[in-house]
Length: 119
Image (cartoon, rainbow, N blue to C red; front, side):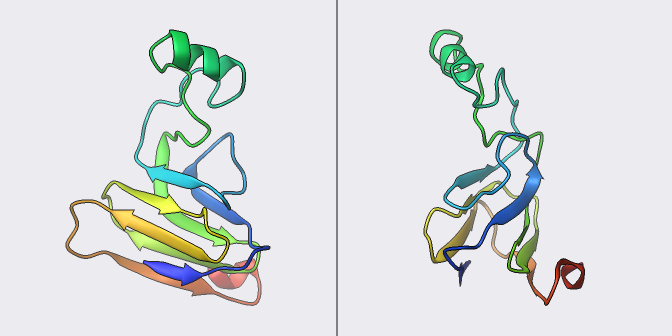
């Protein structure tokens, strides 16, 4: 699933994330995994990942990953799935989602004049 996004768009959501606020420019795994020691905070996570077999975690690890988000320009998406996947916000003008082991995915594209209209 792809859709056009703007360069100024900020992307919020994706579940329980504690290190990153705006996901624009990021690729987010849609899987629950241990947050680790430091959750991407350096140099703590680098040390733990290097010398303690990956215990540092990453800034995108989550205890509650969900394929749902809204943006600062009052758009968003909600997918109704429990499948593992990836949300890719790396490109300036495209958002992509990839889900494994799914023959179909249902979802809603959100758009409104303000955040309340997205609810």
